[in-house]
Amino acid sequence: MSIPSLLLDRLRRAGLSDAVSVTPAEGGVAALAGIATRREGPPVFVKAFRETPADGLFAAEAEGLRALRKLGGAATPEVVCAGRDVLVLSVLEARPAREDFWERLAHTLARLHATTVHDRFGWSRDNWLGHCRQDNTWDTDGHTFFARSRLLRWLPEPRVRAALDEKDRRALERLCERLPELLPSRPACLTHGDLWAHNILATRDGQPALIDPAVSYMWPEVDLAHLWSSPHPPEAKRFFARYAELTGLDDDWPARMPIIQLRQHLAVIAQYEHDWGAADQVRATLRPFRS
Image (tube, rainbow, N blue to C red; front, side, top):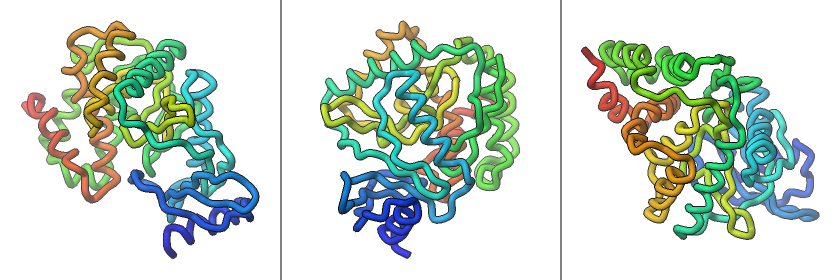
């Protein structure tokens, strides 16, 4: 079944019987997505998997969108329907290619992180990063949580075992043992959890809007690291300096990005045959810990 036909079928099964056509959307990696035209309502964004990994995946994503909006004040799409095998959202606008947009995003993210400080790391339920479950079991220690639930949890995955040799896997364990030396202790706050450029869109009035979260209470730098370490447009340069100013980051923050981004690289290796260089990045970061 073609992507438009599959998405149209999922929409109708979810009760949106006035959907007449779907135009595939570009930019996503894990899921199938498109914009649906309707006879009796405004267009909607629709997202699905050919085979949904778990019943609660889209409910958890909808919960994350609401949390970012209600707890952190970030703009997110309205949830129209969060069914077992389809997620339907209001339509957002493309991200403008302007420096002032990215500076507004710095304010949005700084506010999100500053106003949602929490006394524990984790979330009230597990959710999903791509199509893999994200372990959000509560912990009061950020280093323990990051090691257990964001790094070491990927080692049993078949593609990770194939990509990393025994020395690499042992190096990751050594790095985890030394996390308190490598990363400063910081309180948890609400984080988007999958904040790369494709998950940043805009509202109709040009304000930054966030999509496709994998939320948890974690160090704020997990969001910064993903934007820093994944491809982003040149106009985003001002974002990093402004976010650092707004949050009082020390000058050493760029040196921490490769270690924090290990979580995202390992997730990519685990889920995709083509890893876009993630395995090479992991091996480079682990090299000092191999012996």
